[in-house]
Length: 349
Ligand code: TRP
Image (cartoon, rainbow, N blue to C red; front, side, top):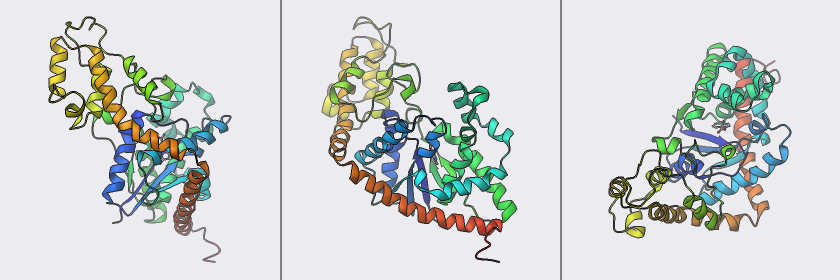
């Protein structure tokens, strides 16, 4: 069977380290492995509008920002098809038919949507488009016949709902749609990078992010202000590792050669942790080490981004070419879907 991958992001902000470690990095590894037949990455502007009807400018601007983040991290439009959701009309049409296969009560039960409704304070005033976005997300996935959908842990209920719609469609209209499967990050650090304040997941709304596009000095400043262990006051005090943001980041980002390059008096993270727990290791030292580790990752991304940002027309050209390619695929699936349903009047009178 063909291996078709589809994933996407809502363009509501620039991408940060949580996105990098949780998804972008593994997308690049997947891309470079070459072990797939088709690979689609969608900038989900239409989905972003479901709770941003009055914020179109924000969504518009962030399409370019997200595309810049993708490309500067190393996603290669020669290998992956990057496109804009609203450029693909077949997605709306497909959603329209899927709406008949889902009940209102099922939509209301989706735990991720439920949580998002609560977070946004929608209560009874939730926009219909927002409540039903799992249906349009099913259209996104199935239109490309994707069987592999790399997503964060929070998106698992979406894929579960997509699978139900596929099952229902295929049982009513005959085997047509491809069954998708979610692949989620392996480790906790990957699936849930804590914010710099240690209070919750890194997220734009909590204002606790390090953005991929942050200047060097800002990254350093954010690291120097990171939450560590409030009881580790004097250098000789024993320190705590659990809940210490610096160590959580080191767990996520340290590479094999990081110690040799930046902190050769330790061989590995275990030694560093042991010293911190014992006492005698100051926060400034571990923060400066983390700064070296992160700057090494971020520097080439930042430099490439600055270069690419000089030519927004080039970025849009990539997105439009991707969208043209994506349209061909989605239209061909729409044709199959209409045939299966039996609303193919022009080709079968
Ligand atoms: N809902 C996803 C998010 O918020 C974005 C998205 C839209 C998506 N369509 C998708 C992800 C299809 C995977 C597949 O992150």
